[in-house]
Amino acid sequence: MLPLQLAKLGKLQCIHPSFIFVFMLCIMTSRTQLTESALKLMTKYPLIDGHNDLALQLRILQNNRLRLVDLHSISNVATDINRLRAGHVGGQVFAAYVMCTAQDKDAVRLTLEQIDVIRRMCSEYPEFELVTSAEALRTSEKIACLISIEGGHAIDSSLAALRMFYQLGVRSMALTHTCNTPWAESSSKLYQFYSRENNSLTDFGEAVVAEMNRLGMMIDLSHSSWDTAKAVLEISRAPVIFSHSSAFAVCGHERNVPDELLRVLKENKGLVMVNLHSGFVACGGKGNISIAADHFDHIKNVTGAESIGIGADFDGASKFPYGLEDVSKYPALIQELVHRNWTEEELAGLLRLNFLRVFQQVEQVRDELVEALPGKKRSRSWRQQMSVDWF
Image (tube, rainbow, N blue to C red; front, top):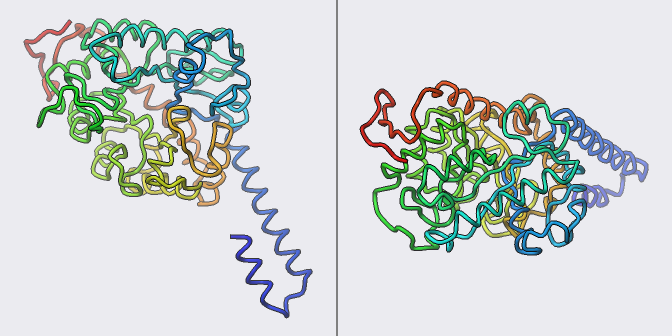
């Protein structure tokens, strides 16, 4: 806006140069104040980001050989320790992701290898701390690491594998990636795995949801079809998350969340963590900070600010809006939201408190189900145990 404003002023010959100088000074002072406000907020409420694929890049670039890389500064990626610090990131959910082509083959082993590299990097570098509870996440004075699994094909339709992943520190799992599993439906048609109609969540899929509730593992609906998401929202006793999805009303991509689901998510007390990938915020164009902020505004208008977080998807996507190219750029986004009159309470929730609340409520449901048996399928009403056991 500033060049346009100056151009208009320049056409008015009666404007004294000193006025233009004062005008520019006011604009610069205002922007400095916004930046200072954003940084002050982020110092007080360090960001918890819901989705990052650095582990995938470590596999692609170095075949998970951590000794060959210095995580303080890495070229060709969007994430390293120095930039996480610059971005005021206090907690990062790192995804253990393997390709859909591993489904029914070696997905479990490959996922174990990705969990291993996340655990290693978060224990070998003193700036990181691996956490497995909401309280540990809340109190960590380092960059707290949480482990998620991106794609239910990683468990190979085994509740035992799901439980073992939990024991290894996994605290959330996306039910699908870009392929269906035998028990849940993806938003993508890229792969032909388990194509079916009107069967978005099978009986075993309901058992997975029940077991994740029992374990205290967050259910992630990013990448799931809208029908699968609706089915999960009907039966989950705990709040769910969309770890890296944006608003469909702003960008009509099937990976984004429509208003209908946003309203149900509000009732569930769950969370949509806005994906910053250009394809999901600008519908194919590169976009800028303003169009990204439009997604936050829209979701807030539908659900309230208590249902919003950030799950940028850095290192899992290749194109991001101007000014949001890597993890160091989060303050610029918060500055834009400050400019749009988001309150400190709203931004504190967006930055970390909303995610902590959801995590705590997931753990609370776990504690309520402490006497429930593993692998017991429950009815949609949750009023009675069903007769089917899953192992």
